[in-house]
Length: 168
Image (cartoon, rainbow, N blue to C red; front, side, top):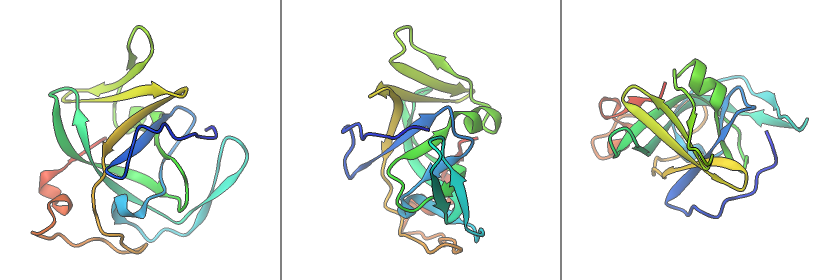
């Protein structure tokens, strides 16, 4: 992993994910993105630059993203995401997406666009500042304490498991 500079291409309504070929795990620093959290024992995550970050918990992140296989915005759950409070970048592990999610890697000829396709799903990452980035619609899930699970609610369309697909 590298020190990350913001791309400037996102605002309060979007959430940026950086595809990281050096990370073995997915990382998110925004508690509001988590749909489910487990009561993990806190541990340290060693970064490529030698620094460590505290992993408070892990769980499932909910996101609304563009599926470029059918050009529809879809609701997706991303399991196995580490919650690292205060981290400035959300990292999607290329290794995790390939080994656990069965995604394959493809790239545009000019290498400005990276695709992660699998049957029925195609994720698009655009190169900016030397990093491949994907912006997704920010969901407005309430922040839940570590160890709690949000309850399904008919007033909140994003927590219903029946309407989401898993990005695996």
